[in-house]
Length: 69
Image (tube, rainbow, N blue to C red; front, side):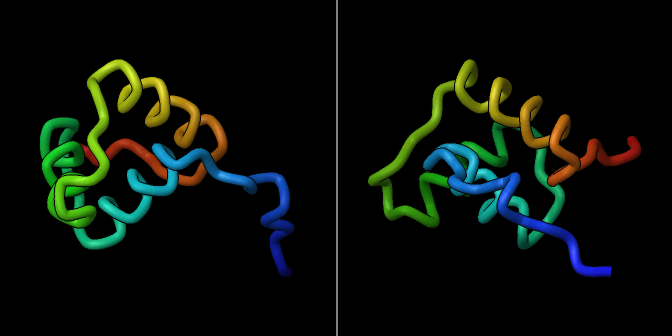
């Protein structure tokens, strides 16, 4: 069954960068922020408020899930 992805687009720039950062590995919050800076060559940075707000939204939409500790 094909899932309709239109409910997830457009993504905010922050959400897009978070998903890119998480595509390679499981990361904690600070690791996500570091990965985004690295992937964007320092051109894009997220503050913790923006990061965690977007993580919550992405979890609610089912696009990401919290890893077991």
